[in-house]
Image (cartoon, rainbow, N blue to C red; front, side, top):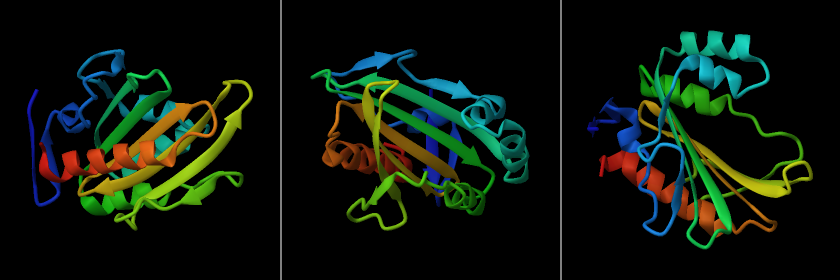
Length: 171
């Protein structure tokens, strides 16, 4: 699996740009991550038909995702990425990502364009969640960290920084 980035344009297998899994973590699913279609992406949202139209309008190219559990077993991390035909399309997708009313926003230091949220515990899941979204060039990314409350913001911020570095440099 290979990929490269030049001037914010990512080419090759999008899974190549998923941040590295820590050596002590346990991957859930495929070690290299999974590719996802626009139909899978649409299924992540409640309004799938509208999402499909938006993905087509923004010229969705590819998607990838990977999940892992941290070595200490405290957190479950999920990364999702969507590649579009242009940086403007990735930016538009990120701009359309709206938080639920109860989500509490917080900053990712050094990255003012990224959005991060503290999401209260879901009694049905028994976990709280931190979520960050942003874009680098033609790729939108989402990083989620699930765990028992309170989920440490530093864990999410570290993962976001690693994902951004991977997207910026390809290494």
